[in-house]
Figure 1: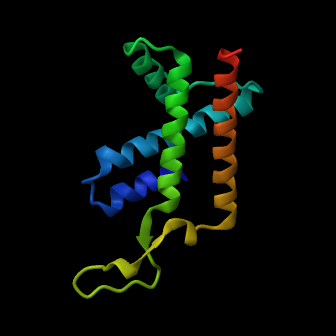
Figure 2 (figure 1 turned 45 degrees about the vertical axis):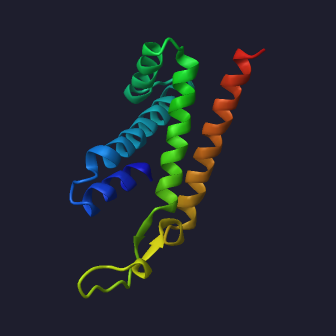
Length: 140
């Protein structure tokens, strides 16, 4: 869902918000697909994609470790998912005379299919659980 949200932002803004919001959301979505696909393929749970490695590098520049990079990645990933679910999208029956008005928009979760929302909710729960377990391991 993140990849589609990012592509939608690029398309709807005619590229003006693409670098600021669209590409980062698409990168997170593609990275999640890569990590989850690799984990399923290998039967392990330790895959780390290039976006997560970038977070590790940024954490290292701030004299922090992989834990902080993973926590930042998870927090931003959840934030992007929440944005994707709550952002305003055009209603299917919206008509415009000169420009669209506020009542022409609806939050995206109201148009999403229940299966898509369920998968997104499960993924967010898994991310939260992995963040909590990683944090608890370092505080033992």
